[in-house]
Image (cartoon, rainbow, N blue to C red):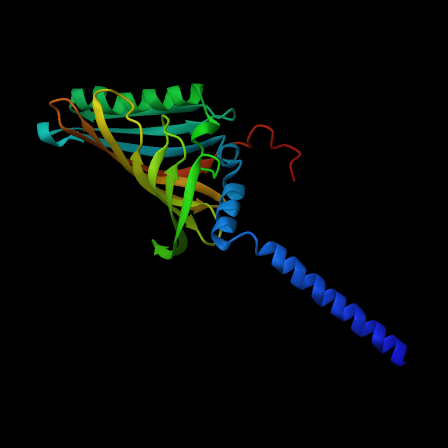
Length: 241
């Protein structure tokens, strides 16, 4: 009947109006902001997901000015409680590089575990994100952002972040620390590359370049990660759907 047709049209108009209003509400969040929100959601809980895992690690370090090099190979283990340890360590090369670069890196990583801080997390609370556009990285579509810390504190950096377009996980980050970790260090620059494995952003390679105030010149280090494997179910994962 004509009455039912009018009712149907009214319902349809009301539904279309609702969709337009909903779309307008969603549009208040810009596309770059939405990407950052999805990045934060995707990376939340990543530490828990890699608990109970192992990776092979090879660290190559050098002092080019002194023509000194050293290398370490090991099994990097993350316990069910998130504690990082290294097993089956094998060293070769110069002892000074081993002590001053490789051993210091391992010690710094251990100290960071003792005092984890949300103050340096890569989130909008701690960083400004400036969208630079969509780009290709190692054959994958990514979103590129310039990032800069809102507060100058130990551990934060200024540089760039690549977010995987399919998973919104971290694909690569590079830059330099805004605060020197030591009075003997002028600047620390780095490049960290990741690979996406089963919904987890897994370290692939990290390169760091440290300009010192000492006579040794620049210290360089490359860490290659491989053979990522989950050995056990993360603590607290039981019962989680």
